[in-house]
Image (cartoon, one colour):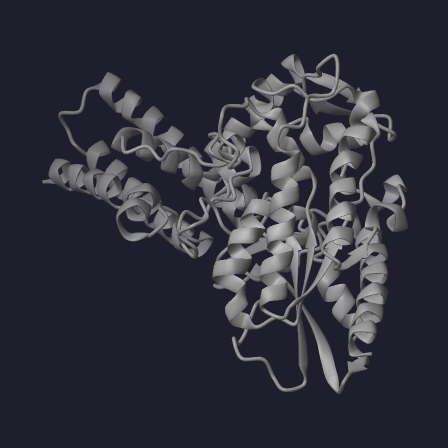
Length: 446
């Protein structure tokens, strides 16, 4: 009877554990911390009971008993470490978002817009370095609450469109220039209306994504103005292997942006097991650190340390076969907006070009094994080519223009990497942005 009870408790552990519960009862295969700890505690209790009953079985040989004790001790140790890591919240950002952190996968397959292979963050929250959370609602806006489609009578609605440099998640302080501008303009009334900027960015998105998002997602919200800032994500399309397509598929259908989802149940179970266990994540993370330290190039940093980089550089800057596609996308955005009586502001993208900042931004990218970057001494000219396109389109389409690249300057303290801003950079950007928006609305009023 004791043997049977011990076996039953082991079977319970095999059937009821964070992996099986996550696979069969959680939509995304993951459990929250509280649920996982509760199940692990339950499993730990079952282990103790199984050990107790089987150790009492009289026919158990000495060797088998010792082996059993060793196995149970290992499992108990694993469970205790796992519970401890979860208790201190270690690996919280390495859990369900491990792919996102290591491979940049901001994929939301057809969860909001079927015409975008990946879309904005949907119903997400991300813990920041200051322990605050950034929120993205079900509409893909950087808001905790839902945005009404019908504007209030006293609302002047602005959508800020762009990629991660508009989303502003990199500064770690839960700051984004849209909200900072709202605070600067909080007491400003234009025609008796309050200015309300809504962060509508799509992380990793290009002008092509903004074009689709504007047409199919945003017109229903009746914005009065849109601000559009694109460069680097469009520019890098030219770095990926080029074929006869001009729809950016050479870049955005790469595994980094559009990973194939395996239907192999065994692979899924292994992946979810790793994603569910904080201890296995820690081990995987440490192995990756060792691999990077051994094989990647070390770029000196100002603080005396170094940045690891897997970037490869060509002898000369690549050609720009997609430059005219970028121009065409911006023109289309302007004309769609104007056809719907929406004012347009095009913005050049700020950047810095030190070796350290470039490595911080792109040294870790998983696609580095298939592309070659321009020589370091040609990055500035390479980048400025696309900013000039933005400036040219603003002139030809007769829309408002902010030369943020020039106005913000190139102080490295304002940047976390080549194009993403620090907290001080966000505030500087927001002040320039708010002042210019205020001026443009005043001009439009007159």
